[in-house]
Length: 344
Ligand SMILES: NC(=O)c1ccc[n+]([C@@H]2O[C@H](COP(=O)([O-])OP(=O)(O)OC[C@H]3O[C@@H](n4cnc5c(N)ncnc54)[C@H](OP(=O)(O)O)[C@@H]3O)[C@@H](O)[C@H]2O)c1
Image (tube, rainbow, N blue to C red):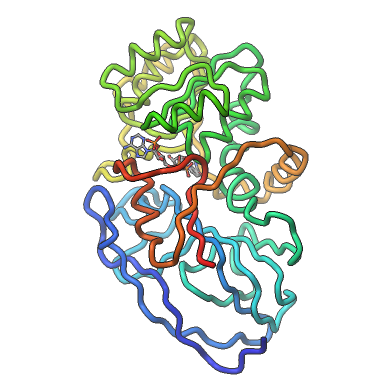
């Protein structure tokens, strides 16, 4: 295909800043012009686009300054997997491109699209390129950093992973098991907890809605938690700190349960207990790690063939907002693993 003229495509935008839990009405699609590729550029057709909790923090009026903020009227972007459909650059038509791209039906790819992690190109015949949406993509990289760079679980330790049935959590659990640790996880519904026990083999799967999560944790880990991989925040995080063993470590990956709050980075009330235990708290965000660690992560993943990394697929460009809003425990149907939207 050699595009000679501009086109108009649909692209999702933020319509208004969500108040509390995001709703599909907070988003609107607009028809936007797509210029024909200039020399050195290509046109991409996204086949898959990711929805991720951090996107909610980009809609907050303050906090989380490591990413640019989305204000009403701004176009959205997401991690995605797209086909090159026309090229006047180094890409071949049919190749897959993985990276951050507009949440649009079609988009342009130019040189230097991302300062840290240039879009990756995979040959057209790459088997199961969807792996780059999850285990070999951003959520895989997050779990790798949490466990292989920071948490470093050891044989015989007890590890707690909150939001364990989700994308990052389910991979973090598997890294902990590979290291020989015993894992306790949390998840919001029974189907997801059953999956954690039956498919991933966790020792206990707790309900983060349980008003007495602290007691459940004490029963499941009578000797205490050696490593907490924290994804949720709020009461779950406080219960985890109360359950920490002496010199226990916390890898603070995310606070998804707090992202709707006007105070989304609120610290747990008992944080000082970490210091009193001689413990260690390691917060991290992915940006800034790409140059040093992306290649090592890919090497590790290339040899891990038995990884369990299901996609929780929502079909259709029109349902991107619905897929996103469903990430936040609103009682809607949520599968296990990485939630993605399939466009084609
Ligand atoms: N540090 C980084 O750079 C980085 C990068 C990527 C992700 N993260 C963080 O990692 C965490 C997991 O992200 P993910 O992409 O793997 O998403 P995910 O776990 O696949 O999806 C989010 C899950 O969070 C749980 N959740 C949502 N609202 C909740 C609430 N109010 N209370 C308790 N649980 C709630 C839900 O699990 P249930 O359905 O089981 O309730 C939901 O399925 C998030 O905190 C995210 O911000 C951090």
